[in-house]
Image: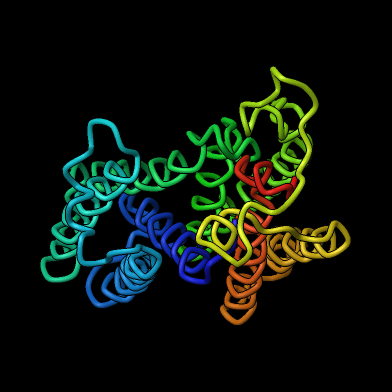
Length: 290
């Protein structure tokens, strides 16, 4: 798939924002007053900013509200419902912390659960798609949830948790790449199955179905050179997971923590670009691109 910048921004920022909300809902760090306000401001800026970025990828952004009505069958709708519920619950929880210096534990736990649910429902939008074998695996929600919690731990200053979650997320990322590289071939789809003509003999592309670029070619068929993909994977793994861990292992300073967050965000942005750029949609078979 063509990696639209809005989708990369959405999945990167919203994952961080809701990950931070999870930790804040659990009371970590145990902040109140204006310090709590700063933490929640960062979390909401990331979460809401990411959600707003996602609307730019919609064909008709003005119809976004209609997505909420399909929660029984659509993971996209469930994501919207979870996101709104999480933001509303956490707003009340944050108001009590900031203005009353009171932590309503039950409300925090509920907000944390809804925030985690938002990340999970987002991941399932991709993990449910049989048309993209690389995405259709339990590793997809496991990876996105792990990255969200690890990034949230970094932003929340939970060093001990981050030192555990970052390596876990890094291992899941490598496993996801390894499994994904063979997913398309393992799915058994080919030009014969894509065209439905396999029953009459060998199928090959005689001529391109279209003389010009169309929506499917622009949005669903994107090829990345293996050499470039491998370089980006090294960058994503190094900046997103390895370097932040090394920075956290040295004596703690706020400057080093900031650099760890910046490095992590840059690495995750690279991995998100690859997430979409390497997505081999089966429709590419019909156009002779697979």
